[in-house]
Length: 116
Length: 107
Image (tube, rainbow over all chains, first blue to last red; front, side, top):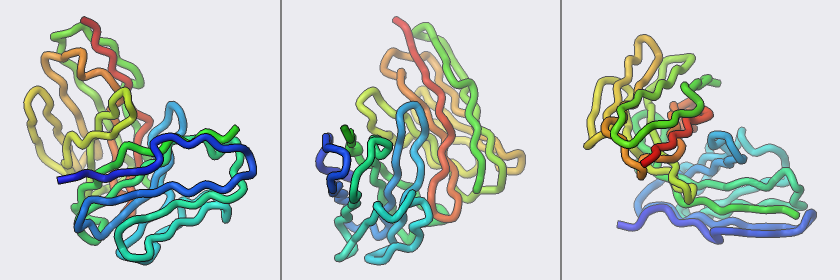
């Protein structure tokens, strides 16, 4: 079946603008995760959803970042007043069960965000 | 959080060679995954291996949970094996990644 999909694949914006990044998880997966990968580094956790609720948002760097998953499927990561330091690849992953122990996470292709 | 260290940071191989990548982690874990990130940035699942040994074609992995390390073996390497290999361990639902090993396989 289809894997995790993310749109757009690339996004160029100007400093101070608002952006939305979308993630479509694997059908039937209840857990959804957002990660951010800077150049030359491994992905870093941002937020984890179990169903519609954010179970852990401890990785969000500041209050300019917000994510929603209103119907327990598609998720949107929202970044307000973008800064050049927000430039990175934003990765989404999903897993079948409740997340946590024993669940394999499957990653999407990422959205490459460039803030000019 | 759990610290994850990968070695070596870079590896250059001649096609056909074998290699071993290592992942050390600082605490006991219930989930460990190996990924290959291809040149287009896609993270491809290789193994889910919290303990024991698994093999998939030319790749195999072993995790010794009691000693907090995992090894990824690449045999008879091919140019398509080039890319970055990440080890990631589960830390309260989220995955904590190492910095990766960049593998370059030369024809």
